[in-house]
Amino acid sequence: MIDPAPEWEQRMASLWGAFDDHEPADFLRKVQALTAELPPGDAIGEYELASAHDSTGNEAEAADHYQRAFAAGLPEARRRQAVIQYASTLRNLGRAEESVALLTAEREAGSDELDDAVTAFLALALTDVGREREAAGLALGALSRHLPRYNRSLSNYAKALTQDAPTN
Image 1 (cartoon, helix red, strand yellow):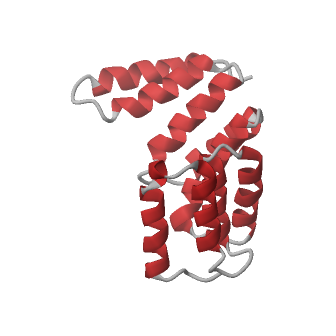
Image 2 (spheres, rainbow, N blue to C red):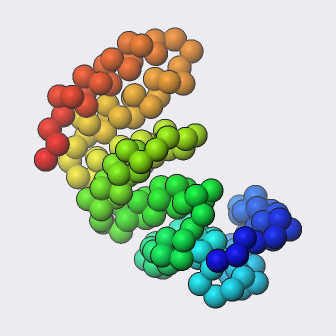
């Protein structure tokens, strides 16, 4: 794997910034053209292809690219984003149990600015496996950190929901 040049990264970021200006097939073609500038099987290229397929509704294709990106050694700067996106893709493919396992492990693996995103997508997956009470508790706990008031109260209610939830 190579680190793409900053100029390549900027072109990819610009393309993503204009996502809504493209038809899905056109957007995908443009991502494919940009990733073709990287060596075949490059982890970042696979991640960008996965993201593009995901965003254009091709979840099965996206899942394959996510797996290749992880196998190729996706750098940490994109790895956690890829885990969130892949788990969401798994959920959309009817593989919610795998999504729950992946996101649960990710919550326990470390902490950064994506913690609440991990938790939010875990809450979605939990609803799909019948663990709605736990999902509500996790979502409310994540939300409680962002409120201007009632943080402690909402956090305590969230903890009570997750502690009382059956874990199947």
